[in-house]
Image 1 (cartoon, rainbow, N blue to C red):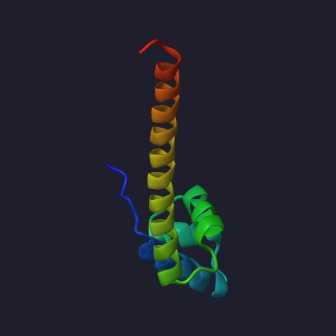
Image 2 (cartoon, rainbow, N blue to C red):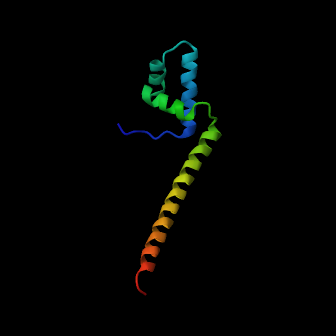
Amino acid sequence: MPLKKHKPEEIIGKLREVEIVLGQGGTAAEACRRIGVSEQTYYRWRKEYGGLKTDQARRMKELEKENAWLRRAVSDLTLDKLILQEAAKGNF
């Protein structure tokens, strides 16, 4: 079975469902079966998204993508600079 990539909005909705089940006296295992994820996934989601609202989670994911792009840009520029410095040492 292929893994499904959940969107932040879906994750927050599922975390709310778990909280309802737990509030009604259910167990974490039961709640996880209900939302279709493992307990490990639930705890990882809770750590990452716990307490966030949907729009906050969406913005966080956008910022993570932007941060990754910026890191790649900086590393590319650093590499270019190092190459130019090495070339400048040679004879022209």
